[in-house]
Image (cartoon, rainbow, N blue to C red; front, side, top):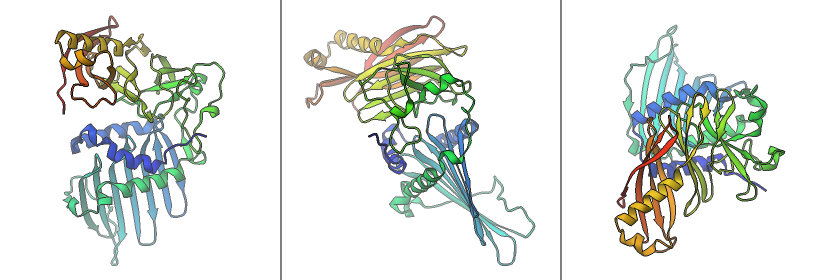
Length: 399
């Protein structure tokens, strides 16, 4: 029997687990909101309306919830709530209440909350009264009061009430009967044979990692999670899988990678998949990891809507790091080299195909100071020649 973490638990865990990645600034969150606003048109949309409430949920084709909205009405007021979500975490919440005034007209109150890494970065409020017959809309340029976030309860500071509300709405509305827009509705038959990997979307929202069982004849229901709309996986090492780069605008696969990810979630216990993209979304790294080591690491480039043959970045980077440690006569590596295994992390890419990653050599569970060492490796993929070059290596200092 296959089970999935409840959405609420996933959201709450994400608030804490993302802390190590570095806290985004308000400017970062603003850019993220603008990016996600562009992605709305290509998302699945679920819609539910009753006498007093209108709820909407937007979900990327990768299965990641993008935005949740609820409008509610009663005799005295109208309330609009919007939640923007990235990596299973609410990063922006908007609340607007329009109340009828006793003498006529309306009072509008707006609150905006910005969150990152298990904390509220900023919360603002502004309010205005409008005479009868006036449009009850606060001008965009109107100032807002910054609220004292130290006075929020701990539950509020970490965004838990938002996570609970998102879960409540999503679990009620994200059902087949409420689906009103599916961008893959008329996709070719090939698209039905693959599943997209959550969290793998390129910066421009066009490309994502996909996977499928290698065997020709299979039924996706055999790989489905219990009580999940779109959660699928293969038992690791139970059968072979193939990974693809998929184009969400044409709903076609551009080509195969050499990755071995086996499910729609990014992580399954100690096994995970990380996609690093260049800012222009044309070059990528697919990194498959296990508990102590990496399983596969490839780099590829998209040219003229086709995927060039991918290159084995993991083997090349590991060899470069080993050569650096041998040449520099690193004492810990010389002592433990035979017992060390290699892990790869922190892949980064630029538009010109250059990038970096870290290779860590370690002896699992050995608590000696020299039993692990991390080397930063620089490289470049020449897209024109489809050639991968190692540019250099250096020790990475302990944090």
